[in-house]
Image (cartoon, rainbow, N blue to C red; front, side, top):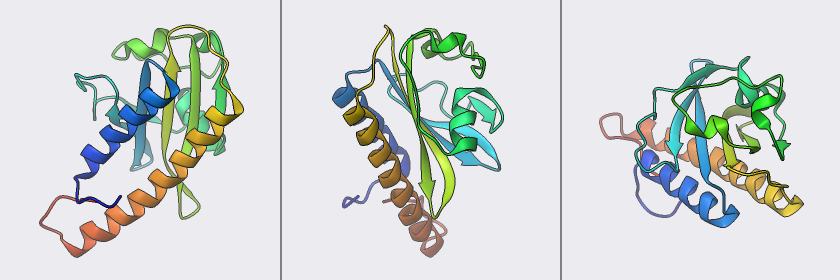
Length: 159
């Protein structure tokens, strides 16, 4: 938050840090754009699905987290949950464990952070607390990014 970086670079650094800290196979950040959750950052090195994976707030586990404004932790067979929506573009949809938190800014859900483990995994209280804290910080970061982009309409948003 103290360096002048493009928002995309900051989000990609955040997913990398979360992946390393939680020792998970996948971390994704979705941001709300026109009432649709859009994949904006991925720990997947190819990042080929950025901007392409989109879901309504009424769809999937991610939509549920955004709609309910609540953390969701599933330790095994997340893909069998009745709220689950499969995306063939995302290999993570076959992973067992799922941890997700809303990103809230100015009392409004502006995104969701998802963490996934390939194998069954019980998420500790400290894992959940850490991810919730990161979600709050990303919300603050997005406010700063929006404020900065308003002041410089020709330059890309940086934080």
